[in-house]
Amino acid sequence: MNDLLYGSICLSDIPKELITKSEKNGKQYINIAVPKLKNKGKFNETHAITVNVPKDQRKPDDKTIFIGSLKTWEGSNKTQNNSNNSSSQDDDLPF
Image (cartoon, rainbow, N blue to C red; front, side):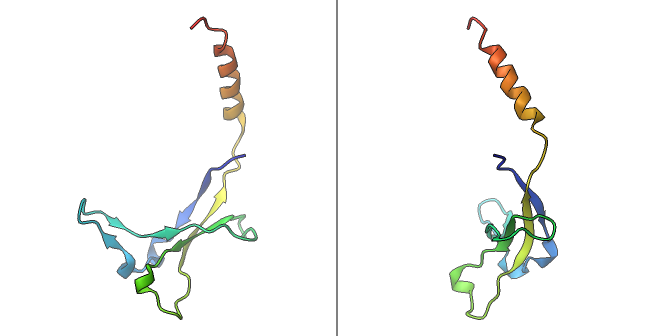
């Protein structure tokens, strides 16, 4: 099973008022949530990326703010097979 997800975020869709600045390091952050989709998207997306609005800033009529999507990496298994083979060869070492 491959757990790697990849995708993109649309920076233009992030509400500027929800970006917070850390007093500790001065960097800017946005809280996100990554829900799994019930059905795959048009481009085989499996997860959405949404802005996680703090409860004290939410209004009853607010809609979910989608800023991106993710899908499961369907890369080659060659790397996994090679690493499995090399570890079995290492088992013959005297140390």
